[in-house]
Image (cartoon, rainbow, N blue to C red):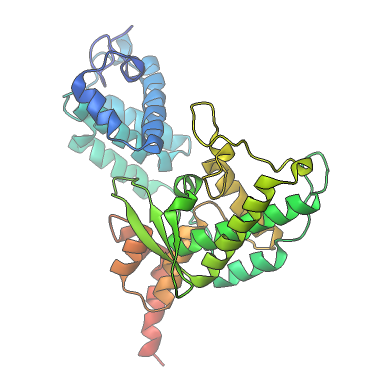
Length: 340
């Protein structure tokens, strides 16, 4: 194998990621990551590895590691993948530090290159917000029957369960600012009802955060309660509708959506798709996605007068930059108090 100037002579990122003979230092580093972060980092490193195998041959022998990394960044930006550069740089920096190597991304040349590419890139499209108006539309249309890809209409119990999941999912995503991965791994043991009708939701550690508990409105709490009741009924009967779940809740061969302990029994990809479908059925126009709940939560809180630190805590953001970006229109409206 040609020398790879990003990872060291005669060694590739892909080989190092997959080897079973990592050093103790590397093993501890990978074990510290959340499963979702571990998968994203490995995927990013494989992408970088494929590119470096193609461009680290004799013609690039004189190029430095920062120069090769800048070439990679420019190639990705030219292909319209500017938004994915941050995760690649984070993954490379993580791996190099775990392996005891100086991080290539820390070179000023790489920083200047990334800043230039971001400045010249088109502005990223923000996901549409799941606010109170949107949630009301979703509630009003959730029970409209749908057809599958083969044209089969939903059976009555299928329709009721799908509608209950959609409404509870959208409300909970908008209350707790859930990421798709967070929603996919929520368990009923993470949800607690309070005497005043509201709820509390435990969010497992992710994105470098410790475990957190967030507030859930009484309306979302009621829909979660209804969903839990329906799941209990259908788990005990109605097998003719294909709604039974396996009794096992643990084990290496039990898929996430087969786990009765999970609230939504959907994968992260399915979470985003279900939110999109619910918004489409409600006649909502806009780029709705699995991220719409986070945008909606931030905007709802700011419109109600919440300070940015409170929004940041509810959404589990490390920095106020993202919630400030999501709520910039709401913040601008504060001037209406003083402008006639």
